[in-house]
Amino acid sequence: MDISIPSVSPAAEALALRYGVAASPAVGPWNDHIALLLSHRSVRAYRPDALPHGTLETLVAAAQSAATSSNLQAWSVIAVTEPGKKAALAVVAANQKHIEQCPLFLIWVADISRNQRLAADSGVELATIPYQETFLVAAIDAALAAQNATVAAESLGLSCVYIGALRNNPSEVARIAGLPQGAFGLFGMCVGYAAGSGSEVKPRLPQDVVLHREVYDTTGEAARRTAYDGLMADFSARQEMAASTWTSRVIGRMGKLTAMAGRDKMVAALHAMGFGLK
Ligand SMILES: Cc1cc2nc3c(=O)[nH]c(=O)nc-3n(C[C@H](O)[C@H](O)[C@H](O)COP(=O)(O)O)c2cc1C
Image (tube, rainbow, N blue to C red; front, side, top):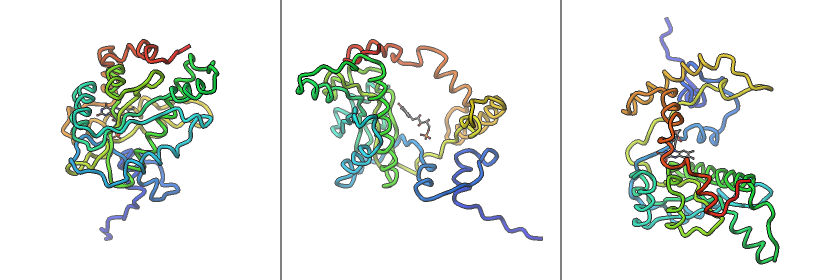
Protein backbone atom coordinates (compact mmCIF):
# COMPACT_ATOMS: atom_id res chain seq x y z
CA MET A 1 0.00 0.00 0.00
CA ASP A 2 1.36 3.40 -0.96
CA ILE A 3 1.33 5.61 2.14
CA SER A 4 3.39 8.46 0.67
CA ILE A 5 1.90 11.89 1.15
CA PRO A 6 1.29 13.59 -2.18
CA SER A 7 3.59 16.61 -2.56
CA VAL A 8 1.79 19.90 -2.73
CA SER A 9 3.16 22.60 -5.00
CA PRO A 10 4.09 25.96 -3.43
CA ALA A 11 1.29 27.52 -5.46
CA ALA A 12 -1.33 25.09 -4.15
CA GLU A 13 -0.05 25.64 -0.63
CA ALA A 14 -0.26 29.42 -0.95
CA LEU A 15 -3.80 29.20 -2.35
CA ALA A 16 -4.83 26.85 0.47
CA LEU A 17 -3.52 29.33 3.05
CA ARG A 18 -5.48 32.14 1.41
CA TYR A 19 -8.77 30.30 0.86
CA GLY A 20 -8.65 27.14 2.96
CA VAL A 21 -8.19 23.78 1.26
CA ALA A 22 -11.88 23.29 0.41
CA ALA A 23 -12.28 26.64 -1.38
CA SER A 24 -8.91 26.85 -3.11
CA PRO A 25 -9.10 27.62 -6.83
CA ALA A 26 -7.11 25.48 -9.23
CA VAL A 27 -3.47 26.45 -9.61
CA GLY A 28 -2.94 28.68 -12.62
CA PRO A 29 0.05 30.61 -13.90
CA TRP A 30 2.46 31.27 -11.06
CA ASN A 31 5.70 33.05 -10.26
CA ASP A 32 7.59 34.50 -7.30
CA HIS A 33 5.84 37.86 -7.61
CA ILE A 34 2.42 36.23 -7.28
CA ALA A 35 3.69 34.11 -4.40
CA LEU A 36 4.73 37.32 -2.64
CA LEU A 37 1.29 38.87 -3.14
CA LEU A 38 -0.45 35.80 -1.76
CA SER A 39 1.80 35.74 1.30
CA HIS A 40 0.69 39.22 2.45
CA ARG A 41 -0.34 39.62 6.04
CA SER A 42 -0.72 42.74 8.20
CA VAL A 43 1.76 42.91 11.06
CA ARG A 44 1.00 44.66 14.34
CA ALA A 45 4.21 44.10 16.34
CA TYR A 46 7.60 45.48 15.24
CA ARG A 47 11.24 45.28 16.25
CA PRO A 48 12.84 48.69 16.73
CA ASP A 49 15.56 47.93 14.12
CA ALA A 50 16.23 50.76 11.69
CA LEU A 51 15.55 50.18 8.01
CA PRO A 52 18.52 49.84 5.66
CA HIS A 53 19.73 53.13 4.17
CA GLY A 54 17.69 54.11 1.14
CA THR A 55 14.69 51.93 1.96
CA LEU A 56 12.28 54.86 2.18
CA GLU A 57 13.37 56.19 -1.20
CA THR A 58 13.01 52.73 -2.78
CA LEU A 59 9.48 52.39 -1.37
CA VAL A 60 8.56 55.83 -2.70
CA ALA A 61 9.99 54.97 -6.14
CA ALA A 62 7.78 51.87 -6.15
CA ALA A 63 4.83 53.99 -5.04
CA GLN A 64 5.45 56.57 -7.77
CA SER A 65 5.58 53.77 -10.33
CA ALA A 66 1.90 52.97 -9.77
CA ALA A 67 -0.59 54.10 -12.39
CA THR A 68 -2.03 57.53 -11.67
CA SER A 69 -5.20 59.00 -13.12
CA SER A 70 -4.29 61.19 -16.14
CA ASN A 71 -0.76 61.38 -14.65
CA LEU A 72 -2.14 63.99 -12.21
CA GLN A 73 -0.07 62.38 -9.40
CA ALA A 74 -2.54 63.75 -6.88
CA TRP A 75 -0.98 62.22 -3.80
CA SER A 76 1.85 62.76 -1.33
CA VAL A 77 3.34 60.76 1.49
CA ILE A 78 4.72 62.00 4.81
CA ALA A 79 7.50 59.86 6.32
CA VAL A 80 7.41 60.04 10.11
CA THR A 81 10.24 58.68 12.26
CA GLU A 82 10.29 61.08 15.25
CA PRO A 83 9.05 59.18 18.33
CA GLY A 84 7.04 62.17 19.62
CA LYS A 85 5.23 62.54 16.31
CA LYS A 86 4.48 58.83 16.08
CA ALA A 87 3.14 58.92 19.64
CA ALA A 88 0.82 61.81 18.75
CA LEU A 89 -0.41 59.93 15.67
CA ALA A 90 -0.97 56.80 17.77
CA VAL A 91 -3.28 58.83 20.00
CA VAL A 92 -5.36 59.81 16.95
CA ALA A 93 -5.51 56.13 15.94
CA ALA A 94 -6.99 54.73 19.15
CA ASN A 95 -3.53 54.13 20.70
CA GLN A 96 -2.46 51.41 18.29
CA LYS A 97 0.91 50.51 19.79
CA HIS A 98 2.53 49.42 16.53
CA ILE A 99 2.53 53.05 15.33
CA GLU A 100 5.07 53.90 18.02
CA GLN A 101 6.98 50.62 17.63
CA CYS A 102 7.63 50.72 13.90
CA PRO A 103 10.75 52.57 12.72
CA LEU A 104 8.90 54.20 9.81
CA PHE A 105 5.32 55.46 9.73
CA LEU A 106 3.93 56.73 6.44
CA ILE A 107 0.93 59.00 6.06
CA TRP A 108 -0.64 58.63 2.62
CA VAL A 109 -2.21 61.86 1.47
CA ALA A 110 -4.85 62.64 -1.14
CA ASP A 111 -3.21 65.79 -2.42
CA ILE A 112 -4.78 68.30 -4.78
CA SER A 113 -2.87 71.18 -3.19
CA ARG A 114 0.19 70.75 -5.44
CA ASN A 115 -1.89 70.99 -8.60
CA GLN A 116 -3.69 74.00 -7.13
CA ARG A 117 -0.30 75.67 -6.55
CA LEU A 118 0.60 74.84 -10.15
CA ALA A 119 -2.62 76.49 -11.29
CA ALA A 120 -2.02 79.56 -9.12
CA ASP A 121 1.50 79.90 -10.57
CA SER A 122 -0.06 79.70 -14.04
CA GLY A 123 -2.72 82.27 -13.12
CA VAL A 124 -5.67 79.92 -13.67
CA GLU A 125 -8.39 78.40 -11.53
CA LEU A 126 -9.09 74.66 -11.61
CA ALA A 127 -12.83 74.30 -12.21
CA THR A 128 -12.81 70.64 -11.16
CA ILE A 129 -11.58 71.24 -7.60
CA PRO A 130 -15.00 71.41 -5.86
CA TYR A 131 -16.13 68.05 -7.23
CA GLN A 132 -16.27 64.69 -5.45
CA GLU A 133 -14.69 63.10 -8.50
CA THR A 134 -11.52 65.11 -7.83
CA PHE A 135 -11.31 63.74 -4.29
CA LEU A 136 -11.90 60.22 -5.62
CA VAL A 137 -9.11 60.61 -8.17
CA ALA A 138 -6.68 61.71 -5.46
CA ALA A 139 -7.79 58.98 -3.01
CA ILE A 140 -7.52 56.24 -5.65
CA ASP A 141 -4.08 57.50 -6.74
CA ALA A 142 -2.86 57.50 -3.13
CA ALA A 143 -4.21 54.00 -2.44
CA LEU A 144 -2.56 52.53 -5.54
CA ALA A 145 0.74 54.17 -4.62
CA ALA A 146 0.52 52.92 -1.04
CA GLN A 147 -0.17 49.36 -2.13
CA ASN A 148 2.85 49.43 -4.46
CA ALA A 149 4.95 50.53 -1.49
CA THR A 150 3.50 47.72 0.63
CA VAL A 151 4.37 45.09 -1.95
CA ALA A 152 7.87 46.56 -2.36
CA ALA A 153 8.38 46.54 1.42
CA GLU A 154 7.20 42.95 1.71
CA SER A 155 9.53 41.92 -1.11
CA LEU A 156 12.40 43.30 1.00
CA GLY A 157 11.42 41.20 4.02
CA LEU A 158 9.69 44.10 5.74
CA SER A 159 6.14 44.08 7.05
CA CYS A 160 3.38 46.68 7.02
CA VAL A 161 -0.05 47.44 8.34
CA TYR A 162 -2.36 50.15 7.05
CA ILE A 163 -3.81 52.50 9.65
CA GLY A 164 -7.22 53.80 8.59
CA ALA A 165 -7.82 54.96 12.15
CA LEU A 166 -5.91 58.14 11.28
CA ARG A 167 -9.25 59.30 9.85
CA ASN A 168 -10.66 59.31 13.40
CA ASN A 169 -9.35 62.87 13.57
CA PRO A 170 -8.31 64.30 10.18
CA SER A 171 -7.66 67.85 11.43
CA GLU A 172 -5.26 66.58 14.13
CA VAL A 173 -3.40 64.54 11.50
CA ALA A 174 -3.22 67.66 9.32
CA ARG A 175 -1.83 69.63 12.28
CA ILE A 176 0.80 67.01 13.18
CA ALA A 177 1.89 66.51 9.56
CA GLY A 178 1.65 70.20 8.58
CA LEU A 179 -0.72 69.48 5.72
CA PRO A 180 -1.89 72.44 3.59
CA GLN A 181 -5.47 72.94 2.44
CA GLY A 182 -6.24 70.44 -0.31
CA ALA A 183 -4.20 67.68 1.36
CA PHE A 184 -6.02 64.99 3.32
CA GLY A 185 -4.39 62.19 5.34
CA LEU A 186 -6.24 59.13 4.07
CA PHE A 187 -4.51 56.42 6.07
CA GLY A 188 -1.20 55.64 7.69
CA MET A 189 1.12 52.68 7.28
CA CYS A 190 3.54 51.08 9.71
CA VAL A 191 6.71 49.75 8.08
CA GLY A 192 9.35 47.66 9.83
CA TYR A 193 10.59 44.22 10.73
CA ALA A 194 8.00 41.93 12.30
CA ALA A 195 8.63 41.03 15.92
CA GLY A 196 8.32 37.30 16.50
CA SER A 197 7.07 35.02 13.79
CA GLY A 198 4.51 37.54 12.53
CA SER A 199 0.90 36.69 11.87
CA GLU A 200 -0.77 34.01 9.79
CA VAL A 201 -2.13 34.62 6.31
CA LYS A 202 -5.74 35.71 6.81
CA PRO A 203 -8.21 33.73 4.68
CA ARG A 204 -10.33 35.58 2.16
CA LEU A 205 -13.83 35.00 0.82
CA PRO A 206 -14.10 32.19 -1.73
CA GLN A 207 -13.38 33.52 -5.19
CA ASP A 208 -16.89 32.83 -6.48
CA VAL A 209 -18.21 35.41 -4.01
CA VAL A 210 -16.14 38.26 -5.40
CA LEU A 211 -15.54 37.09 -8.97
CA HIS A 212 -18.57 37.52 -11.23
CA ARG A 213 -18.39 36.32 -14.79
CA GLU A 214 -20.02 38.66 -17.32
CA VAL A 215 -22.75 39.73 -14.87
CA TYR A 216 -23.10 40.11 -11.12
CA ASP A 217 -24.40 36.86 -9.66
CA THR A 218 -25.18 36.07 -6.01
CA THR A 219 -26.12 32.40 -6.55
CA GLY A 220 -24.64 30.32 -3.75
CA GLU A 221 -23.30 33.35 -1.93
CA ALA A 222 -24.95 32.64 1.43
CA ALA A 223 -23.62 29.06 1.60
CA ARG A 224 -20.12 30.16 0.65
CA ARG A 225 -20.27 32.91 3.26
CA THR A 226 -21.23 30.35 5.90
CA ALA A 227 -18.22 28.22 4.96
CA TYR A 228 -15.99 31.30 5.15
CA ASP A 229 -17.43 32.15 8.58
CA GLY A 230 -16.16 28.77 9.79
CA LEU A 231 -12.72 29.40 8.32
CA MET A 232 -12.52 32.84 9.98
CA ALA A 233 -13.73 31.55 13.34
CA ASP A 234 -10.93 28.96 13.27
CA PHE A 235 -8.43 31.62 12.19
CA SER A 236 -9.35 33.99 15.01
CA ALA A 237 -9.18 31.17 17.55
CA ARG A 238 -5.67 30.25 16.26
CA GLN A 239 -4.65 33.92 16.54
CA GLU A 240 -5.84 33.91 20.16
CA MET A 241 -8.49 36.52 19.38
CA ALA A 242 -12.12 36.18 20.41
CA ALA A 243 -13.53 33.57 18.03
CA SER A 244 -15.58 35.60 15.60
CA THR A 245 -17.08 34.91 12.24
CA TRP A 246 -16.73 37.22 9.28
CA THR A 247 -20.49 37.86 9.42
CA SER A 248 -20.27 39.07 13.02
CA ARG A 249 -17.20 41.17 12.16
CA VAL A 250 -18.98 42.91 9.29
CA ILE A 251 -22.07 43.56 11.37
CA GLY A 252 -19.97 44.79 14.29
CA ARG A 253 -18.00 47.16 12.05
CA MET A 254 -20.82 48.35 9.79
CA GLY A 255 -23.90 47.95 11.98
CA LYS A 256 -23.53 50.91 14.27
CA LEU A 257 -22.28 54.46 13.90
CA THR A 258 -20.14 54.31 17.05
CA ALA A 259 -17.89 51.83 15.21
CA MET A 260 -16.96 54.70 12.87
CA ALA A 261 -15.07 56.34 15.76
CA GLY A 262 -15.91 59.85 14.57
CA ARG A 263 -15.52 59.11 10.87
CA ASP A 264 -19.22 59.66 10.29
CA LYS A 265 -18.26 63.38 10.11
CA MET A 266 -16.02 62.84 7.07
CA VAL A 267 -17.88 65.17 4.72
CA ALA A 268 -17.46 68.09 7.13
CA ALA A 269 -13.79 67.19 7.64
CA LEU A 270 -13.17 67.09 3.90
CA HIS A 271 -14.93 70.42 3.36
CA ALA A 272 -12.85 72.01 6.12
CA MET A 273 -9.68 70.77 4.42
CA GLY A 274 -10.45 72.19 1.02
CA PHE A 275 -12.23 69.31 -0.72
CA GLY A 276 -15.62 70.09 -2.21
CA LEU A 277 -17.80 67.04 -2.75
CA LYS A 278 -20.26 68.31 -5.36
C1 LIG B 1 -7.28 51.26 4.29
C2 LIG B 1 -7.00 50.27 5.40
C3 LIG B 1 -7.04 50.67 6.71
C4 LIG B 1 -6.71 49.79 7.74
N1 LIG B 1 -6.67 50.25 9.03
C5 LIG B 1 -6.21 49.45 10.02
C6 LIG B 1 -6.02 49.95 11.33
O1 LIG B 1 -6.28 51.12 11.64
N2 LIG B 1 -5.51 49.11 12.26
C7 LIG B 1 -5.20 47.81 11.97
O2 LIG B 1 -4.73 47.10 12.89
N3 LIG B 1 -5.39 47.29 10.73
C8 LIG B 1 -5.86 48.09 9.75
N4 LIG B 1 -5.99 47.61 8.47
C9 LIG B 1 -5.59 46.21 8.17
C10 LIG B 1 -6.79 45.31 7.94
O3 LIG B 1 -7.42 45.05 9.16
C11 LIG B 1 -6.28 44.03 7.27
O4 LIG B 1 -5.73 44.33 6.03
C12 LIG B 1 -7.41 43.01 7.11
O5 LIG B 1 -7.89 42.59 8.34
C13 LIG B 1 -6.91 41.80 6.32
O6 LIG B 1 -5.80 41.21 6.99
P1 LIG B 1 -4.40 41.02 6.26
O7 LIG B 1 -3.94 42.36 5.78
O8 LIG B 1 -3.47 40.45 7.30
O9 LIG B 1 -4.62 40.07 5.14
C14 LIG B 1 -6.37 48.45 7.44
C15 LIG B 1 -6.38 48.03 6.11
C16 LIG B 1 -6.69 48.92 5.09
C17 LIG B 1 -6.65 48.46 3.65
